[in-house]
Length: 122
Image (cartoon, rainbow, N blue to C red; front, side, top):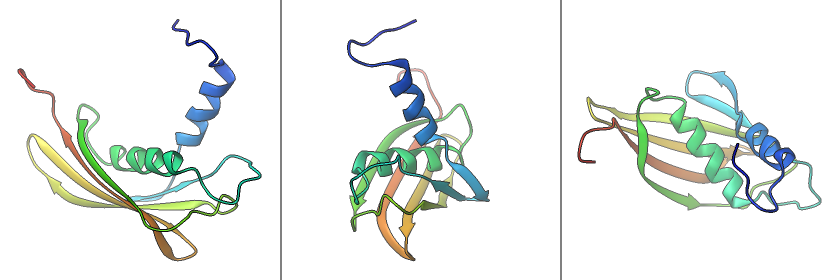
């Protein structure tokens, strides 16, 4: 088993729980924020959850090779985040997804991600 100085198994488990999005329907997921005194959601959490939402709509063998993210509004840590995935392209080698994170009926974050089937030389 691997070990990183200062990182506990409890911290890893908490991260994995945070990234385990609830499927609501096709192309729609719900993420939660950890209990916190902060009113705003940590941006890395939203980006990570959005990437997981995108990855759950592609074939398991594909790997993300490019992503672009935009923070549009601050997130509210007291409210779940809805992740809506748009299937932009499903090709033989490349797949493209756009994810919008939504709270209070408004977009707070946008992510575009491209996935690729592993190929020799890449």
